[in-house]
Image (tube, rainbow, N blue to C red):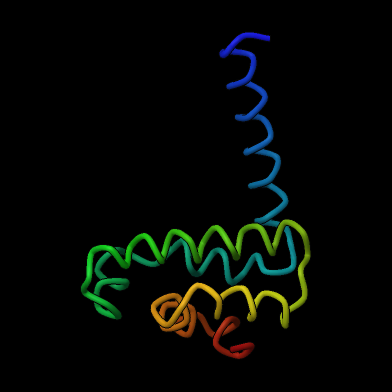
Length: 99
């Protein structure tokens, strides 16, 4: 298998995962998080490193949605990311209600 074949496989898998996430149990939260602008995130926390926490939060919610993870498990995962991720998540009503 070539690097191009590996890339094509990874690309297909990523697209499949994304489709599942946007149709999964936490799709609304994922859409709301994805719609947040950089200025909205910076209003919560001005530290530019915290944009990395925002990206991690999106990844956690995407994975949870694709796998239909329970609210309790998702809340636990979000809390494990730390206070910045929790603060951002609380701006999304469906996430705020489980935190």
